[in-house]
Length: 589
Image 1 (cartoon, one colour):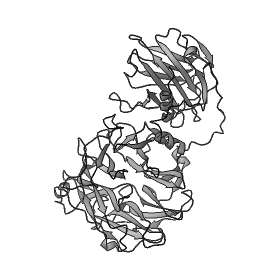
Image 2 (tube, helix red, strand yellow):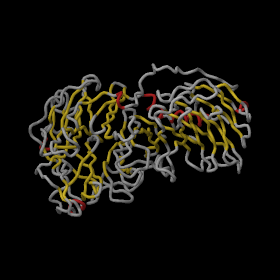
Image 3 (tube, rainbow, N blue to C red):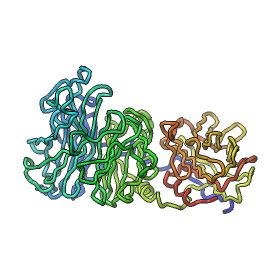
Image 4 (cartoon, rainbow, N blue to C red):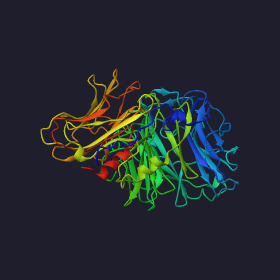
């Protein structure tokens, strides 16, 4: 292809708001503290959301569980309805289950939650310390609604939980047990399953030891009398699902595969989540395995935060996580999604995309719920003070689900497209204006490179003026790609993972500058850099004030290039990860 300038993006301020920014979502009502906003959709389209709330912070004695309804897909909500009144005693971590064939005209909604039934006001830690927070102990109970969440049963019913070794060996000898659950129950082969976590000890980090378990009922879908619902605690034995190392394995979240297997994800404090498969209905699991993108493949990175897996109506999967290897509760912004497809009884995960973010890196969005309604996809999240619902762009999801097969080059926003014949050392080409980054604009630079042994560091493409304003893409001595940005006052620079640009081989490099969350990513040979063993993460936030990176209006190829360029593209926007993967698969050199 000859040197091609394809379209110029609008540089005005009238661009549509970024749907990924959480403040562009719709707020779900709460009393100040807002956690775990989970939604079920009734046959008439009404959404019923349950959440844990209260006027104080997380763990406040007034914490309780409520519901609210929306008839317009989460844009507006009715007032809060108590499932339990404000504490004490605390009622926490409510999860809804819709049984469409229930006795009510809208089916029956069950609300499961932890209830401090004995009104214990202080809990003992493993080292004799006292914890005033008492919202992860007591009884596991439920109430129900037969009128679409307009009101809830006066009576609550207890779910029996079989004790494990960690219960019997806690400081109370099992007389007081600690546990909680996240996400929503699933229905699988005529039974309901609820993912749960047992806590063996309180201490460092509040929860000092944890392991996963599941509650299963094989008659809840057809039994109208709540007192007659039967429950089984899984897995078999007296030890739950554990992490490969360390004492923390918690917030287990379930889906069912098409072959009848169960699959779950859960968090650890080791910088990686775990995943596990059960081929016998949850009775046994191949636990203690770090989650990988494919069997035997690269490990997923994730901190001590909720990481949820969902099965969609099309039989494919979505996975929410944070794509960095932190080991504590921090780092929950941005949130990322990966798409999964089944192959030979396992889920294969795509390279992820940023799905939600906010401007303050310290904000911690988490505990999401995926909602499918009328062919559209929505997601809820909370930062503990504000819960919101967001409509997702279905093209992002489709890109994730088809990423393994995508083999076409993106053309939207393409400003400069050079074929191999145009990539002569020292050649220069006109470059249309780039959008301003501070206003949410973006930039993507990609190329094919074949460098010989000993090529060393070198500039590959350069769009900077004499003062350094503009951008450049380079190869480093460590075998990484590096992008540098300069607006005349501020600079930003980031490198891909090292050692990826091996001598004597063609490599595809895409440097992506996303002016929404102010993040730079690299996709090299179709793989999103995640930091490898060198760094906790493969992406970087740049200064939000970095703005106009337009240089001389020309892109120059390295005059003393060591090696060959097999094609160069510049886009006046950020490429999605899936698009960068598609460009790689399309080939060019």
